[in-house]
Length: 305
Image (cartoon, rainbow, N blue to C red; front, side, top):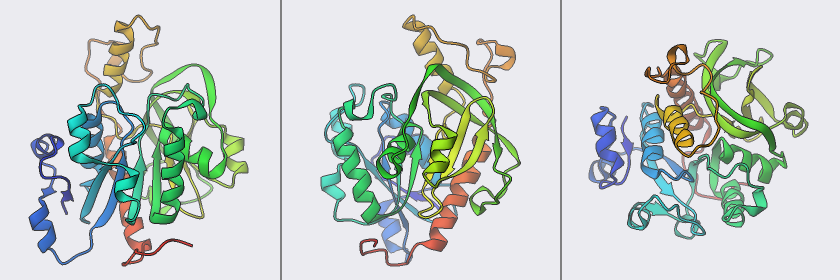
């Protein structure tokens, strides 16, 4: 089933070139079904790139998805045109009376900054608390996951000595079997790009469950057993060249950075990296969407208790 996005969104053409199924507004309105309503709070500076990455994953489900793009009013990134945000993005004031099935909060390039020093932290806390009433389930990605963990579960992030950067194998939690991870093998790769981490013992102390863990990069995926909110501390949504672009950007700025681990063939930066994680990204999001579809009330129009 196709994904419904804004008819004039620039990401639409890129998605169509990938043969991603997209439905226009007029066609969607004629279908006698209730689409799952997703909100993507896009905190990444490259809005278009992130829009494509998540719309691609959401389109893989046989269920119709209606995607709303959201940003913070407090802060606008310099490399995204203001007109793009005005035309295609909503703020909390625009949607606070609405109800949604899923909120996705992306990562953001602010992870070394203490939470309360982030320019839009107060607004983000308000959005997260709003979502606890008006959204059925949440997904946090990297810093977005850390932000939800802090606001809802009081789990801190911790600065590491250097950036954790590369593609690392993660092991599934063998003590429990999650429907969410159906189809996964016991060991799978995830791209990692962060300066901070969440401690295993603090996560468990908060009553949360660790789904995936790496002996090299630590906790990779966490779930709340009560709400089934999902915290992905890494980047399954990344394109094959995303880590390469980050590496070349930092290198051009004379920032010392290691070559991404387990990424370039033979660690040769002149060779093109291979996307080994995308099948797991599609599988995870398809499983998540199907799970939400089975769990959410058909008429999710009143506040959660």
